[in-house]
Image (cartoon, rainbow, N blue to C red; front, side):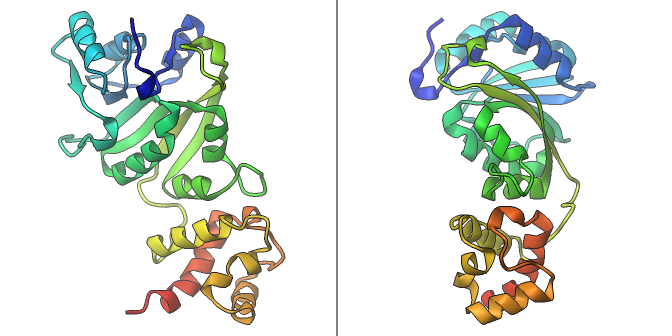
Length: 261
């Protein structure tokens, strides 16, 4: 089977890890969206566990092969780019699975967040370093804007790591298998979410600075100092030392001043 390098395709071929992936997924007659089924190594198992399986594959050549191998009333193959695929046809929340091409990881996370009303949880293989950023806790070097963004909407857990040798073609990095479970509503909430993520992005663009200096774009030093002290945040901390709740508290104080019309 020929794979297109332009699609960033690296398929999980080691049966030991294929079996671990399958056994780790909790599927109870769910509707499942598979991103990039490739050769169908995992598709065959999903077809037995899902009530309805939608396989979204960008590679036209692979779609033809998959239809020949796995066509059934409960399995549908769709030739589309997942990043533009419309999930609004779903009548209930689905489970999403994918061995994600490393070159679309960031965009895929944003796609999942935008479409979270159609998704209850997902199981994904990501580049190990990227997975660590998604699941990172504050006070760690991996913690950053991406951690805050996804953890505002979902619980993220790393299930196990996968060595690069388990894939074909062999990539230059190891991977991790993770789960993302979306909250019915955020566990901590900011009054203005757009402003919250603008503030967090600005803070982490200066992650080596103290938080008081990282937030100077939102006011003078005396004002920022007063805001931080009033909500009991040490102005000498670095951006990675603040929890998501801390950022929500800061945003709630600063946003009225910066979002007035």
